[in-house]
Amino acid sequence: MRLEVPSRDRGQPGAARGAYRGVMIRWISAFIDRPVARLDEAVAFWTAVTGTKPAPQEDPGFVRLHSATSDDWLEIQGVRDGPGGAHLDLAVTDVAAFAATARDAGATTVADHGSWQVLRSPAGQAFCVAAGPGGRVLPRALTAPDGTRTLLDQVCLDVGPAGYDTEVAFWAGLTGWRLERLPPCFHRLTPQPRLAVRILLQRTDHEQPPSAHLDLACSDVRAARARHEQLGAAFVGEWPEWTVMRDPAGGRYCLTGRVPPGEKA
Image (cartoon, rainbow, N blue to C red; front, side):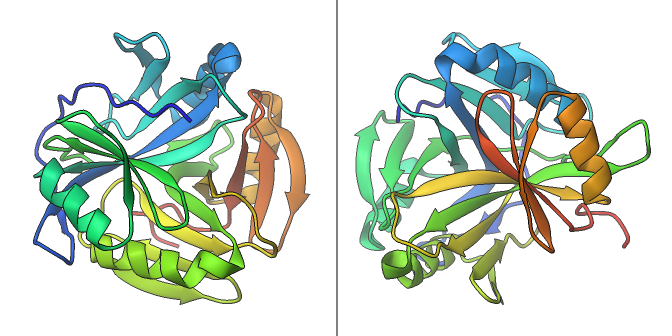
């Protein structure tokens, strides 16, 4: 997986404090990783379902999804190997200190570019840490023509049983965020104060390579599914609280029955 981070140009956010050395996580973005050959399909779909516009970067393999109503929190990356997935991008006050904290907690460094680093969690999930002030304005849910509200606000890390408890402890300690157990197989980490993206950890039924996918909060999952299918997504499977979809570029994601953050139930 090729993980790179473009330059940051966002303003100061409300920040969440990591638990180890007082290193501040100032912003968190979700990277949508898709095969580079299908980058255009991914961009067309994800801009439509998030209400953003594409803002290509200097590297042609990256497209920031620009929001006119909030600070940007999404980016699409074209990967040359494999089907892609998702990864977290943390904007922090001190990259070296944060990376050292992560390594002390069990992470390994994949690449050190000075102002940004690529690391792997104990379970092997890649994530990026970059110098950047973050953002002030939180994203708002997109209102579809039928009134359905959706917001991409969560990255779910899918971890096998053997490494799950260690992975939960790693992310809880590194972020210092509020940890909530959601039976039977989930833990959620919510930043306080709220940032654009929170983290869900899912214990998979079987051992598997580390992976991550995107979750959208939906006021009406069935209506959201219908709209996403009209935009080219495919239905994969349905559970009581979430529906699994596949976007036009082949990546899986979930529509979840949660009220979008910042809205009343």
